[in-house]
Length: 240
Image (cartoon, rainbow, N blue to C red; front, side, top):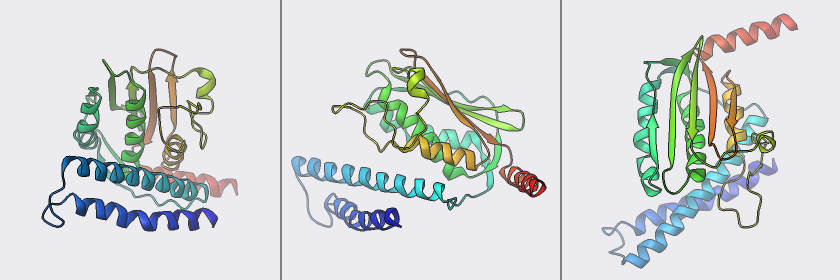
């Protein structure tokens, strides 16, 4: 109840803040701003959106903890999804001169929740953006068939993660860099949310990494989440 109240109260003023930023940047509505004013508005808007994302993360964790997160089930063209991700992330990659590679070679279809799978992929890829080198950064992602599942992956050539830190990586509020001067933002909830989403969709998520040799995240999605959910229900009824 406390989490619901706080997140609702935080979200309410953020909507008009972001709305007014968009208005200020439209010369037809308010008038032309100079470059310094536009930069200031951009900073306000960027940080307001970041706070909105943090609020959203808290709400997602709450829904997962209470088993109240809603999931859709529809046919998903995996190639179309990954091409969408590629095009959507081009500006982010360009800012750090990162080479992104969609290495999917199969025409795959799954029946699951596209928005939630996109949320997980987006989280994993943006995490990789934070940790690849400023020169020669590379992020590869894609999908391949694996029996009655589809295996998704996100690989980078970043700093890598030690086995000790991998143990806590999917725990809530865990940060790889806990120093006061840490460069990477975020709530420490992204990977915990990703794990909750993938497991709710009937899949698994894990990491393979070595220090200095980058990190590879993998997760599986059943070909048909509807059949998986029905099977779990039948097994539960048999146990009872």
